[in-house]
Length: 217
Ligand code: C5P
Image 1 (cartoon, protein in one colour):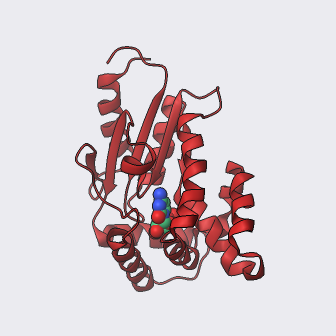
Image 2: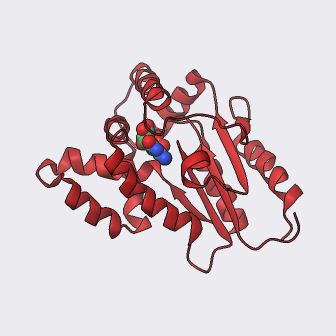
């Protein structure tokens, strides 16, 4: 591949594998629009928990249509309660269709100032950006993921225990890998990045090396 102006990166990963941090640093480095697609399901879950009376498909459709990436930065979206509800909502095919439209817009038509897009989630490599220039499956062992998520939630001042976080991640893994619609899976053409024993910097450099081999800006 020679000089290329627009690149699309698709990342799938189980919960708390470090894909978000990685995707953010890669996006910053290559000036790509970054979308953490899990945050959209989390936002809908948060509405379901906090504004139950407003939670209907018409309202959600409007919410997604007017979605601004800043809406997804709300720290309340990060709790395990919201994550669990998000994984239940994510099994609804009507909701997934609405979310897909927004994701496709971000992936294929990011604002002109970007050189492309980078999305992470569960079905990005095979459903949202099947023609991505780069596909990665980022994972780490269960206990390490639980420890990372536990530290992250504690930093946010949440009252959590390691065992509750571990249990939550196990439950979400089970649901995300086994659901009928858009399950989490590693596709053949995605590159496996196991971050269990790698620092954030080492993960970043590993991916950067793969991208730089094919692309020159
Ligand atoms: O990535 P995160 O853990 O924030 O995602 C929350 C939940 O949203 C996941 O457990 C998963 O069920 C759902 N999700 C999904 N498809 C995506 C991203 C997230 O089903 N592309």
